[in-house]
Length: 102
Image (cartoon, rainbow, N blue to C red; front, top):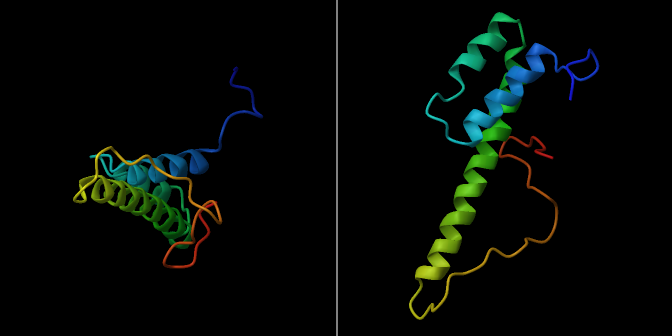
């Protein structure tokens, strides 16, 4: 893929995506660099807050699923690892603040 004008992400969008990925992945750098960059670009705190809220929600949801699967496999009498079952309903639940994550 070539870097043409129609394929390059605007710097603020790129920083938001990177911030969200850092938070959701529990990256040791925590997205601090991206946060500083977004603030220096004048991105409103409310927009940054939404990105952080969604990323934390996805990170926490993933942790809960892993913990639940471990608990099921660790339960007395469990003989085989539990395979993650597809959850019904929406592709994701809204965050505690009510932000849609998909």
